[in-house]
Image 1 (spheres, protein in one colour):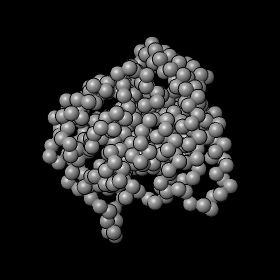
Image 2: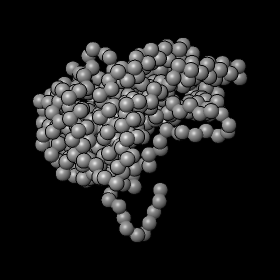
Image 3: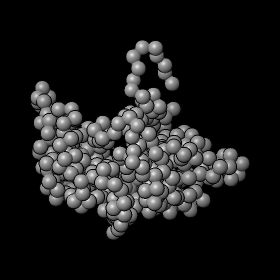
Amino acid sequence: MTVSSGPQPKPGILDIKPYVPGAAKVEGNVSVHKLSSNETPLGASPKAIEAFESAAKSLERYPDGAASELRQAIAEFHGVEADRIVCGAGSDELLQLIGDAFVSAGDEVIYTEHAFVVYALVTKANGATPVVVPEINCRADVDAILERVTDKTKVVFLANPNNPTGTYLPFAEIERLHRELPSTVLLVLDAAYAEYVSEPDYQDGTEMVRTAENVVMTRTFSKIYGLAALRIGWVYCPPFIADVLNRIRGPFNTSVPAQVAGIAAVKDQAHVAKAKAHNDTWLPWLTQQIGGLGLEVTPSVCNFVLIHFPKAPGKTAAEADAFLKSKGYILRANSAPGLTNALRLTIGLEEENRAVVDLFRDFMGVAAHE
Ligand SMILES: *Cc1c(COP(=O)(O)O)cnc(C)c1O
């Protein structure tokens, strides 16, 4: 950790482990397949790319800080009220704004064992105490969350479905969690992967936000929409919370290229359907193939799978990671605290998925002969 005798940051900030993004490069001269950051293998909608390119003609102009047209387009597609949407530079910014607005030093913030890493960041940056709740088989446990609620609890962050585990809670469980939470606790439903989920007992939380005062749902254009580079996301809020977030966000927190690409993307649902269909083919295939090699795969409803490795020397996640990297395939190691012997694999193109399975087969086979 760095130390300085000069200006000191707020308490908590130096407890944050700097975020390590999914790797994008490997040593040597192999072609690189980045399957480490849950990006879509199909790329962005061609219409979004066109809109992005057209934005290059007037870069001297400030954006519409309220992102009105984008909010309108989102509202129309999702059947929600545009004035209850706030856009941000990725849903990460919105999670941070929620922390800035609602979390103070001394508060407690609840999230689960293998939760998305940004929740810890937001909690510590605001000097609050993280309350980390055990999961059952890499799935959030509503009873365990509720047991940890105290009068200091300010926010519960829950990704549904969760990254990096890929698991989800049926909506009845979310409803039970909400019902039992004090009305002063903000429940943040992070639905970054909602578009990928087909399970009939899943809901993204829209209906709950519509009728409750203490629930928000965050969404992103980074995943199925393929606009991660542009940093654009949104949150659907009760009116009071939208008002609070609008007061503290940067006046121009989303860029013109991101806004226009987002509008084109949300209107091109055919492209989204294509990405979903691709995932529906390859998620079960990868789960089954990798599982068939004697590796444990957590059942996922997302565009990635979490693969658990044996502890035996020669077969660990770190060794698999090094082997795959030497062949140009980058997976995500250490995707959450406590997942040191697992790798997260993003669903890729058909050739990539087939190649990864072949490499895992080699890896397990090679190790078995040692
Ligand atoms: C990727 C991801 C996000 C953040 O995405 P942005 O690129 O900041 O919009 C949020 N939550 C989860 C669970 C994610 O996996």
